Length: 131
Image (cartoon, rainbow, N blue to C red; front, side):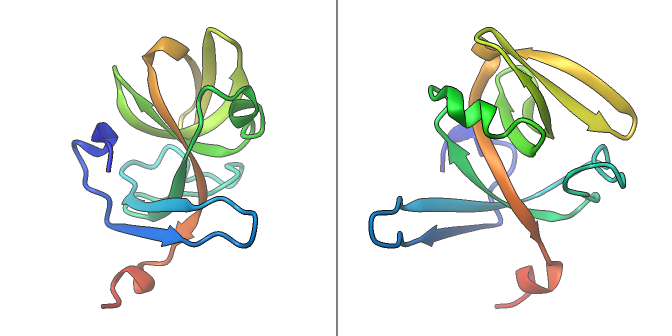
């Protein structure tokens, strides 16, 4: 995988074959650390230690950003590393990300962002423990 995971190797890699006319998607499963989205108002409630299923988006496409506003995403930042936050705003210069616990929003310049991943769901630990 890319160097975005330099501090954490994805727990699993899953390749999904496309349906006819669809795109090939490479999913990663990574473990979350922290509880900033462990809140009833979070679009996806994540607890410390949860596994998440995610895939990389094309950051050169404005629709990749706009289609994910209000959703939980993983941002690969040069300055901060991997951040799992709620995407709340996009401009050609920066994005705004939000955490719920404590509730706080902050801006990240686009030139600091190496990659954007959409998070599809939390993967139950019992599935991760299967051989």
